[in-house]
Length: 171
Image 1 (cartoon, rainbow, N blue to C red):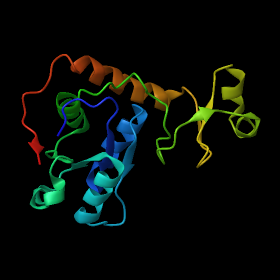
Image 2: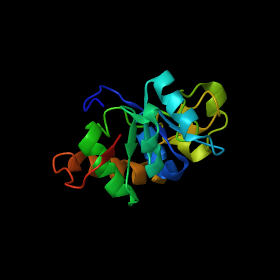
Image 3: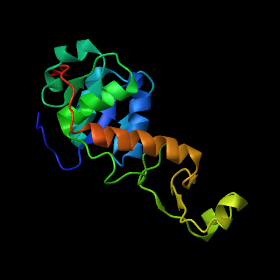
Image 4: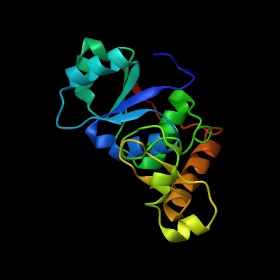
């Protein structure tokens, strides 16, 4: 598996939903497996779409298709998982932050008049640039949710200089 890739794309297993959310917040193309899709199908999807498969399922290593695409992460808290990804992929947590919808992974666009008509009045008064998802129509602004996520991304970016010594299970 390549250690450096300009902008890796990910497919996270169902157990890594929160990590997937934060990868999207950082601007990475990150899909979340749903509906009990088989490991074989997920690995096939990764090969077809040029994605890395992030999983906590040790049985994935039994699949030949896992080679060069699957990374088995240990059960750990979100900060620890981010540190492991820092170590392995050298992610830039801030360079493309808040450019994807946190819900459906679509690239965000500047809110047009139609989107602005659905924005909260107090946000419109702030004069801040708003973004929206053209797929699900959610509107994004720099409120308290943004600030909490941004603080984590800043911490993870800073932690890139002090990588973890824990091992990863690369397939």
